[in-house]
Image (cartoon, rainbow, N blue to C red; front, top):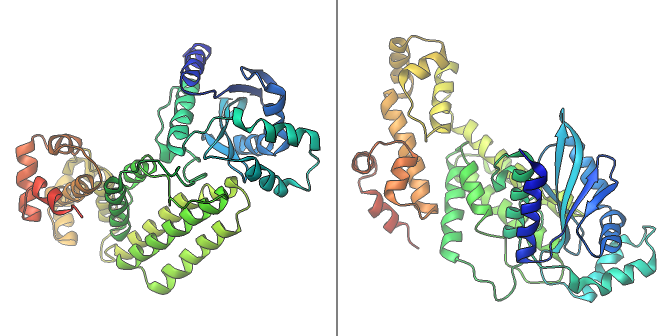
Length: 401
């Protein structure tokens, strides 16, 4: 793929919306190019505030696009071009603010860097130039970073594949419009998956990241707001896990540890991965609790495969290969251990996923049927009615708050 041509187009698209600049550094952190007219000022900010050092360190540790930023909400998005898994070029978009910031906010924020060797005159220059920095909401900035990654690698990622989610979940502006019903539906889907220990949670989590920016608490401390979002999210996930069968003592102890980690965070870089790690941890613990201890290891693998791949057409023949059995022996053992035929278990798993999609998305019944490989809407509706006692449309209507 032609990276330079892709980046040129990407740069034009960024400039259409706001003045978000594109920077290129070598593997050692030396600036190679930028289109920023305030290169000396904002380039120095990337370095002086420790963001470049943290970005380079993270680039050596993982291959995910990410955000790095400051306690007062100044952010950069970072991704890498690699050669044999080692970073060769670092591309940066920014800086941006994730929320409205005043001079007072920046002056207060710089107190965190009081011990750093930052020239006082440079601090004043940056504070006076704050109006030159665009304000870009979390959701939009996430999408820009995913676009950058696609331009560099040709790989399409979801928001949940990045280390940007929840890293700067600040309050939306007071006049921002939030679709409360969609947020509620998304939240219910996420909690339903915790209660059921559903390991195939990625799509639901990704949808939630693109719907809500976190708890809309208004204040002047964005890092405090990010911590509040993490703590609230952890609290409701903890309770859902208890409803799913995780012992309260274990659930509250686990939740407390994640909330304390969030509270102890000093920067966005420290807090950004906590929500996803916490959510995954709770789901896996509930999944283990809900596992049938009587299942043999081969049948447990088949069951997990079915639950993790509801969008595939799963045949007993494929599961037999996974288990190392003949198809005849697999179907008999599966029925004996689970109480369901293979096809019956597959149908139940697909309907469970359909219920999540009906709760948390605006996909039509036909689209859900297609996504879950039912073959036709009529067949999907018939199986859904047999298992749930109502049609998919009736089920969705019943979920309205």
